[in-house]
Structure formats: structure tokens, C-alpha cells
Length: 405
Image 1 (cartoon, rainbow, N blue to C red):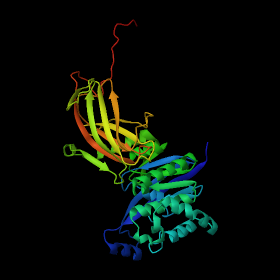
Image 2 (image 1 turned 90 degrees about the vertical axis):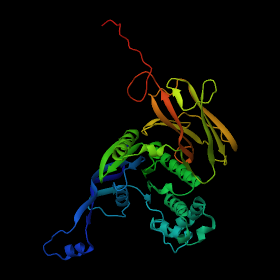
Image 3 (image 1 turned 180 degrees about the vertical axis):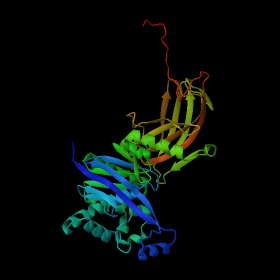
């Protein structure tokens, strides 16, 4: 069994909150030790152990304590109580541009940050060309970083963070900024680091990314560990919690919703459902009727290999009924420049219980994490089922009654 990379015991972080600024002063000069503020626990008695080589996801709503925990692990913040033991060199992407001097050029910030991470002059000189190449921001590398866009910050910050070849990498939503191609490059590099034995603590609101990369997930809620365990189990519980905790007005979401990256990589042009005779289906279909879904899409950049097509079905109350993609099924879709077509057959029908359902479609990169084109509620369909049953699916079955005991 591998040794621990991170060991946290009885960790708490407490802040004093005051209604008025003068209350802080009163408390400071008070001879009676009177408290004018109230304590707020950003973290409350956290205990966890992460083994070397693990990829651990950290989920939770905003304000749950995720960023506070990461900042304590990386010694940006001090704990109010408890201990944190870290074994190995740590590199963290917490806040884009943190540690960058806005008046320095990109080159100067590379040298500054690498020296802060403990690299020698010769090591910095050796690694700088690779950092510049990975960041790929052109001549902006010679300009002050105050002139950078958020995407440029992300590029340079990630390139510097991975340059030290850390034993522990901590990523807090930093990869959500930047263009699609750079996100893909970052994900590919992170994947190589994971395969090479780097311990990764990955914070994201993208549950699909958490499911893809993490073998274990920790769910923080109100500063405490709500659940710690196997990825799919924790993610399912967390999503159920989010559903219970918010009121969604689905009647306002009937219209097609579209999410398109502006990099011009690919675009879904048409989504059609046919019956087994090749006739286009309208808005209704029997639950056991064979259907074929046809997706036509245009590829504008065929240099990206192993792209993924995903199709999902959601119920009218937004329950995630079914999600299929070519990555999970081990299939490769056509990816030539221009128009392409893929079909998905349901030879026994969808077999969901009667009611209204919606289809979604997405073109994504090879890990099915970063989308090129994502369409929600692209098609509405009413599934007709005269047979009465409970639950979400009608699974084919047979009662065996005439049996000897």
C-alpha cells in the first residue's frame, strides 16, 4: 500500500465576523475580553488522508470550504486548529495569476515564480523555453502581464505550475478559462501526470470531469466532510443533494439551449429521429418502438483526434435518464473536414415509462470533458406506454408462478 501524500487531522479554520468595523476595534481594546463578533467555521474538524498517486476530486457548493482547504494545504492560509502533513513537492493552480507581478513581463514572472517554487538559476534557465512553448502566447510573453487576458493568465499559470514536475498537483477550477485547444492540452498533460504517479487534488463544478479523472471524491458541505468515497457514489449523492436544494422552473427551459465554444472546431447541424422504416418521427413514439437517431455535424479542425459524440435523455423534471457516448462504448466517430454523420440505434425502443423526454447532444474532445458544441433539449419526444408500471423504465420480465416448492 502506498504511503500518504497528504494527511490532515482535526483541521479547522475560524473567522470572526463583525456587524460593524468598530466592533473589531472594541474587541481588541476590551479589558473584559468581551466578544463583539461571532465565529464562522470555514472548515470544521476535517480529517482525511490521500495516498501518493491518487487522483481525488473535491466537490461542494460555493462557500463549502473547498478553496479554504486548498489554501491551507498549500500554506497560503494558516489553520486555526489541527495539523496538515504534506509529503512531496506541491504545485497549485488556485487563483489565476496569483503570485504574478502585473508590472513584470511574462518572462520575468516565469523566473520569479520558478524561484519561489525552489528552482535554481540553472533549472529555471533550462525550463523557460518549455514553459514558453507550452503557454504559447506569442510575443505577449515579453509584455507586462497586466495586459494579458484571463486566457493568457491561465496558459502561463498552468505552464509554470507543471514545470516543476510536482509530486502533488492541486487544481482549483483554473482550467475552465482559456480556449478549447488549450484546455485539451492541459487535460492531456494532467492525464500523463496522473499515469506517471502524480498525486492530484482536482476541484471542479464539472461532475463529468470529476467522474472521468478521479478514483475518489470528497464532498464538502458547510465546512465539513459530507461524504468521502468511490467517485460515482459520491457524485450521485451530491447531484441528488443539489436537486433537493434548489427549485427549478422547468417550464422556462423548454426552448433549445446551446453552448458553443468560439474556436470553430465542430458544430452539430442536424439531429433527427427515424423509425425502423426510415420515416422521421414527430413528437410521439411508443416505448418499445425501434428508433434510430441521426446526427449530422460539421468538422472545421480535423487535427484533433478521437473526438467523442454523446447523446443523453432527460425527463421533463430534468432527471438524467440515460447518457451514452462513443468513448464509453469504445467507438470512434468520423472526423474528416466538412460534413459527417453518425447514427445511434435503439433496436428495442427507449423503454422508459410514459411521459415527456428531451434529448441532448454534444461533440467533445477525447476524454468527453471539454465540449466543442453542446445542445440541450435539442428534441422533445412524448413516449407512449399503455402498460402501467412504476419507476423510470419498463424492464422486460416474466412472472413464473407454477413452480413446485
